[in-house]
Image (cartoon, rainbow, N blue to C red; front, side, top):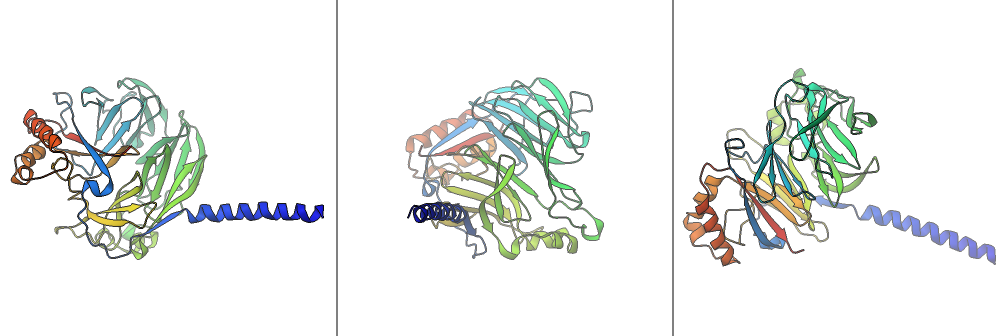
Amino acid sequence: MKLIIRFLIVFAIIESCQNSIRLDQSQIKTFDLTKRADISFLKLSDLGFIDIEYIPLETCEENSIGHFDIRTVTHRFIDDNNFFIIKQFNDILLFQADGSFVSRIGTVGRGPEEYEVAHDIDIDKTGYLYLVSGFQEKFNLYSENGKFIRSFKSPFKGPVQFRLSEEKIICYVENFQGNSENSFIVIDTLGLMLKAFPNKYPFKPYKGIPTVFGRENLFYNFNNRLYIKEVYSDTIYSFDKMVFKPHMVLATGDRLITPEARAQFDLSYLSENFIRPIHLFEFGDFVYYEYTYNFKPGTKNILYGFIGSKTTEFQVFIDADQGLINDLDGGPSFLPKTIKDNKTVISWIDAKKLKEYVASEDFKNSQPKYLEKKKELEILADSIKETDNPILVLVSLKK
């Protein structure tokens, strides 16, 4: 009898473990992006946003940004220290949370404390900024006020993306030529290689000419965890304890580019027939994926923004160049670009465009949810000049 009971207990445990495994697999949300992508016109309140804030970036001779190309700016926010780090090409500027300017970080050059090209930047939990200059095969480390601390060697040469996670540096090796030995390399903060993940997508470029097909890997953070999505995969992976684990699937069918296609077709054909990733992040209950498809030079092309709920069947496509209708204060449409925290999404707008919109009839005739915020936006627009630095725009979900 005892033997039977023990058997039943063991069987129950095994069955429970198997059910747990099946449950974990079933929790990997899959979105079908192959359905007809009718463009929806969503309002900020449709997604549960309840507040909007504008942060003008202080303008002075040392930090003039000029036109903010919303598709080429790398943007970081440091939660603990309340700083904005703005990277545009080789300019890296540090602002406090209220928009006041702190300092310019680093110097372009070939000296021991300088960098030729800032391929990527990130911030650790203490506020130190890491910069990789791939062609110089080095990382530079700076204090939160922009002071150079030290350099250490990068384990490879060429364009690099990276993020800090678990006190390690996770590097993505750009694979434009199709012959990268590894896709991801994990190093410590002294440059010592800890682990390498082999390149699963080798190819020979079409006619031997390397081409850049958008961002071949997308990094993002959510709930204190790092996520990645490679251009050849529909799956988003989390990085946890030196292991990549499936997190979510953005199923794009035959629109997903393959290494074979890179070998067979030129960039024009690839851009027209395959999805080219731009941005990816999560906020609240949603995932946001921005990409181009059926791209034809010289014509009006749609920049798609996919928004899907992680807990319901809700999913829509927006024209990401048009953004979300701002029904909170009646201001310009909101173009989602990154997050400040899990409940706050960030965008930005040129000072000139903001002033022009507030002076328009569309704004004057708008009936937003919060009329007092409409008035605050009018006051802000009157206080800035067209040549000022861009204005950060933050929208928040209910906490």
